[in-house]
Amino acid sequence: MKITKKHNTARKIEISISIYIVCLLLSLIFSSSIQAQGVNLTKNFGIGSQGATPAFGGMSFRYNGLAPVYLQTVGRFILNDQDGDHMLGAGISYAIFEHRGKWNEARLYFTLEGGWRYKTEMDIKKEIINTTTLAAGIAFGGELVFSLGGIPLGLNISIGQGIGRESDNSQSKGIAGVYVGAGIHAYF
Image (cartoon, rainbow, N blue to C red; front, side, top):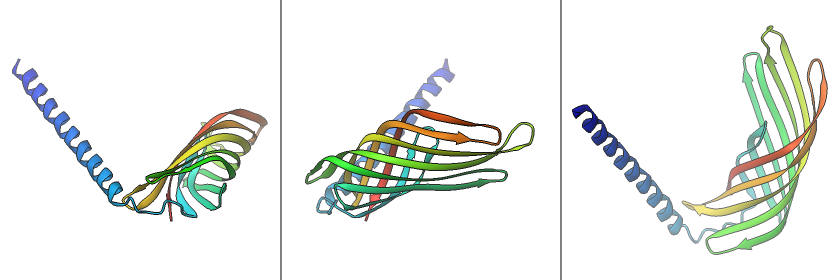
């Protein structure tokens, strides 16, 4: 019986500490955001991370200087012994709705995206398989830009339909499906 009470007490202390840390972090974030309310959220360049299911994603660069048209590139280069995974993508978006408020910017957009992926991996038979994927798609998405500690930070999410072709050492096949993408960018 004592072990259970000690375990429950320790668990309550852990939960209390966790709640305290979360509250402390949230208060720091909100206080720094309030202090930075005078920040201009309209910036031309953004750098961050962007991903989309099932396989595309990496470091992302955005250009907003042609608003309401937005340009974006995404890329990654991964080497892991015999396994490698490289990807390069680009997109052009058109904002159908934009709102600039005192605290944030919001936009809804349609985007046309395309990507190339080259992947090498070793199978069970110790043979290296090279896979190349070319794909394109159209998506509908939204972005919310707000100030975090004086830095304009944008969170985006999109959903769309993609088509493409995947080729490996032995076959080539068409692919199609729904994809969901999300990203985070710091603007400067």
